[in-house]
Every structure is written in C-alpha cells, then in structure tokens.
Image 1: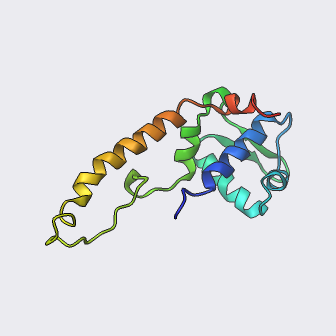
Image 2: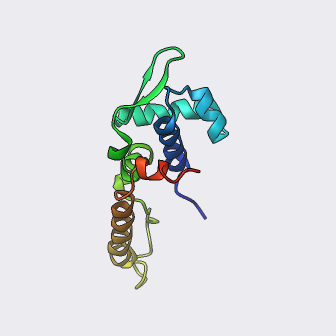
Length: 138
C-alpha cells in the first residue's frame, strides 16, 4: 500500500522544533531529532520557505518561523510539502476498458467520493495549529 509522503510528518516535526526552540535551529540539529540526513531537512525547509512559513539565516544562523505557531495549521504544512498531481490526493488508474460496465464509469462514480474524502481531511488539518501540537509535547 502506498502511503502519503513522509514529507508532511517530517515538515510538522521541523516546524514544531523551530516553534519550541528559544533560538534559531540548524538543519543538523533538526536532522538529529528527525533522525534523517540534514540534506533531507534542508530540502524540506526550502519547501517551507517557498510557502512563506520559515526563513533561514545564511551560514550557521538557522531556521526561524515567519508566522506565529498559532497561525500555522497542519493544512498549511500539508500544502507546502505534498506535491500532488492536479491537487488530487487520490490518483485514478487510467485507460479502463470502456466496453466494461465498471470500466467506463468507475472514474466518474468514484471521483466525487474521493473529492469529499480529501476535503474532509483538509478541513480537519486546517483545525490544528503548530501551537496546539507544541502544547501537547511532554
């Protein structure tokens, strides 16, 4: 089974570390917490920067939030790092057999269900902020 990219959960981890740290944090420090290569962290930080969520001081300055943790939702993060085709979370197989009852109708029948599922997920992600998550860290 193919999962949604781990970019999302790693990006949440990155922004959470930045939010709870009293100083700007480096990609090496973040990579230690995420337990991944700093290159992966820098790539994700680049995506978050492009989305206007973080910025980075050159050299060893580190990353910092451009918006308050109360103003960054999980949906903001999801949209920043999950590159989905045609803004569709669920992909459809192509070239079904049009001579088959199911094959000629499956995309039309299933797509509205998938669109509603994606909308529900996005609505839920929009309700949670980095600040709310940070308050639950022990």
